[in-house]
Amino acid sequence: MSEAEKTSKTSFFKNVKSEFKKCTWPKKEDLAKQSALVITVSVLLGVLIAGIDWAIRLGLTALNLA
Image (tube, rainbow, N blue to C red; front, side, top):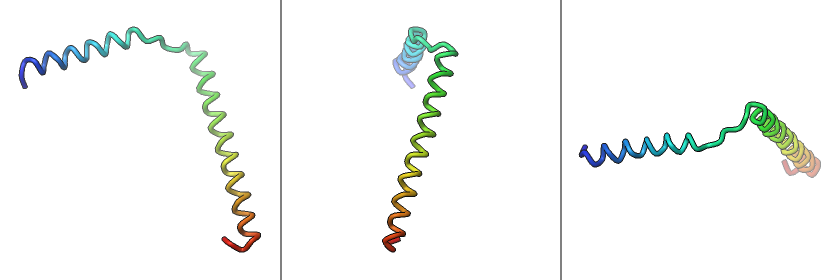
């Protein structure tokens, strides 16, 4: 490995570290609220998709196509 490659890798990781310091991270309360919202929406969409699947399966069974 050449000296230039070592320098570029070191420089890259220094740049990554400096960029992470610029990030604004959410507060615990905001993170908890957003996580709860994502979980709630995921569960509701799962229930909705399961309901649609059940209705289609019921309809196909009624038509004797399944």
